[in-house]
Length: 118
Image 1 (cartoon, one colour):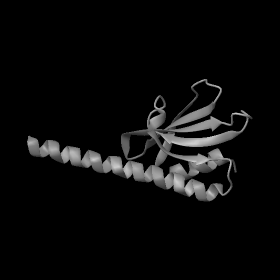
Image 2 (image 1 turned 60 degrees about the vertical axis):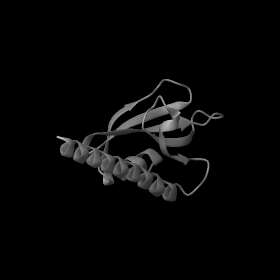
Image 3 (image 1 turned 180 degrees about the horizontal axis):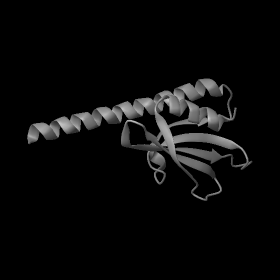
């Protein structure tokens, strides 16, 4: 099973779905996925597959990122040069979930503040 299929399966288990597969048409990007959390339609992030600089047919890195135009918005990443992909995948998904829960908690606090100020 390819690593992309494994990633998609793990995202699906955590109620994320791929809503768009696209590319920036840059030599360094293979493709990116826009993903959305099933229970909050506004919660969207990207999974970006970065090519190896020496061999553009190989993926060097996989990033979960909030904004494709801001390299400082990386949530987590997997370096594909090292082994133990299954372990790294679990950590990758876990960090995406931590990010989602953190955002969810911020949104709940914001809603409560707005209700109390009315």
